Every structure is written in structure tokens, then in C-alpha cells.
Length: 135
Length: 328
Image 1 (tube, rainbow over the protein chains, first blue to last red):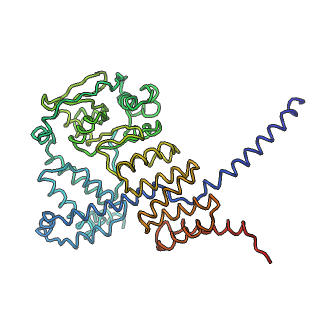
Image 2 (image 1 turned 120 degrees about the vertical axis):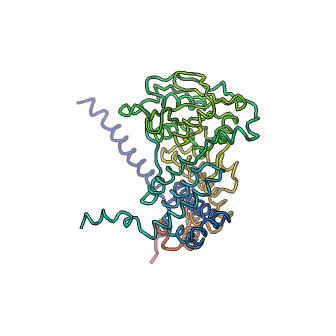
């Protein structure tokens, strides 16, 4: 007991000090700093949109789209309506295509066509039987 | 050990399916083009100094990761790494686990473009490249991690540290086929003071940011500084540097970085907000208030960051009130 009494004081000091120290540290944690992660994803989204729009400005792609009956404005409007996540997924797909090669043009055009088609149909209408089952 | 798919919704899945079909059918091997290009004439390279860890049963992930991590200056064995990256249930390692383990050791894992030439360029610059291969077929999968340490294009060779082989020599087309089945997944592992030669601004910063969550602020500060040597005008990198310094309690350094950004782009609200917070922490409440008001002034209420800016301003005003109590 004597021993406990002797150490009680330093321990309580230590505990009090720790709490005070923690209290001093806390405001920093609450500081309203805009995190780098937020800024990088914002920069990413901006870059993705520019990249996709640049593709749509390419003459060969415009010609292909027009030959499929799609105007560049329609395609751009569709891209504009994409969410950040969707934009990133789209840009990711475009980036994962290997550089060069004639087949790439076709794939890019296909991507935009799929975009427009899914917009017109709405994905849920692609498989109407799924809905019928629920009724 | 499935390749990790990017997040996607609805049509993205459809898109990927279409692409996969289109890709398989038409995508030619890059090797043909590379071997015909002038790049094929370059002298052979072999990074002899890259260490070798013979692989234990199924543990190609830890072995390959130990190879690149030790090359970058750490002292780790596959046995050290196995608990961090090896999933016994799947007898393998996921790519994200390799990325996470790399970051835990203060290294930057940078995902390369899916191009043979990029891979070759990194090796020529002296960086071993960790790759994911599918040694089987697309429907009979045999996933494998290995490290590319050399090439001799004239002799049609890629040299790998692979499995139990210290010097596994493969014809380029064969290598590409196995690598293509791994979705051309490849990373370099570098110290924060060193950039991969193929590094691009946003992807590199994306590779650095997760180290912030691990609170490796000294590493991120170095990495952002390194990024700024390559892209001196990168606002995102400089904001990252400011944030890292702020976290390291280097308020003056943080202030300098944020101020630099406000001069570079006077319309960039986040810099004013972070500057305001940094000034407030230094007790310069009047200047802090001005900066916070500028951040709000530049932003529309619909912006997701608007409430943060308001919070900053309110905190500063509250601090001012505490400092100068109202006199009757």
C-alpha cells in the first residue's frame, strides 16, 4: 500500500499532463485545411474532362461519329452530363488503350456511341424483362 | 489474385465488356511495332545490382516486392513482407496489397502506362519494374508477379527475376502475351526523392497522396518537392507540399507554399483557405480573416468546399472574439 501511495502522485501527474497535451494537439486535428487528396481528385477530374473533350475535337473521330449519325455536340453534351466518377472511369478506359494502331479509332468511337445509346435507352430499359418480373 | 477493376457503374460495366471483346479480337501485340521501331536498335540493358529472392511456394508477391523494395534501399525479406501482402486463402497477393505495403515502407509505387516501350524506358533508366503476369491462359489463370531487370531487343529478350530463377530470359512476344493477360499491370517503386522517367503529374501525385493517410508527412513533403522539380507550376504538388509542412508543424513553410499558389493562381480558393488556417495558427488573425474571406468570395455556395471555408472563417472570428473581449 505504501508503494502504491508513493507512485500515485507521479502517475496522476502523468495522466493530467497527457490529457492536457492531447488537448493542445486536438485543435490541429480540427483545423479546416483542404486536403491534398481532395485537390488531386479535383485536378484529375479536370484533366479527364479536357482529355475526353480533346478527343472529340479530333477530326477523324468527328468524321466517324457523323458517319454514325451522331453530332459532336450531342457527344459533348453527353460527356458533360457525366458524374466525376463516370468521367474518370471513361478516361481510364481510354487511357488503357494501347497507343497507336488503326483499331484504336474504332474503339474510341464505339465508346462514345455506347455512351449515347445507353443514354437514349437508359440502362434499365436494356433488360425490360427484369422489371416485368418485379411487377 | 484477380486484377483490380476501377470503380464503375452501369454502362461502364457494359463498356468494359464491349472493350474486352473488341480488345481481345483486334488488339495486336505491341512487340511487333517495338521490334520494328528504331528503339529496337538500342543497346541491351541489365540491372545486375537488383537483388534476388527465390520464391517460396506460391509467394511470388512477397518475393517480387522484396526485390524492388530492397533495390530502393530498404532491408526487407519476403518473410517480412508475407504477412502484409500474402493472402493464404487465395494463395497469392492482390495488387492493392502490394501498393499498400510499398507505401507503408515509405516508397512510391507508380503505375506505368500499359505500354511495352514505357516499361523498357524505365528499365533503361535503371528502375526495375514489378509486373503482373498470367502465365496460364485467360480461362486457366496462373497469376504471377515478377520483376523486369533487363532487355536485349536485338536478341529478342526480356530478363526477369522470376520465381526461383534469378535470371529468367524470355522472348519479348511471349513476355508480352503473359503480361497482356495481366492487363499490362506494372509498377516502379522509387524513393520520394526520385521520379520514374515516365512519371506524369497527376498520376504521380495520385501515387503520393495515400502516404498522407499513413501520416508519412516527411516522405510526402519530399515527394511533392521532387514533383515540383519536374513540374514547377504544379499547383496541386505545391498545395501538397504546404499541407505536408502544415502537418509537420512547419507553419512558416506551409504559409510560403500557400502564398506561392495564391500568386500563381489568384483564383484558387483552397490556397486562401489553407493560408487562412495557417495564419490563424500563427496568431495573425487579421490577415487570416482576409484570406478566409477571399476563399469564400471566390467560391459559389454549391461548391462542396464552401462549408469548409465558412468554418475556417467562423473559427477565426471566434478566436478574434476571445482575444479582444468586448468592453462595455
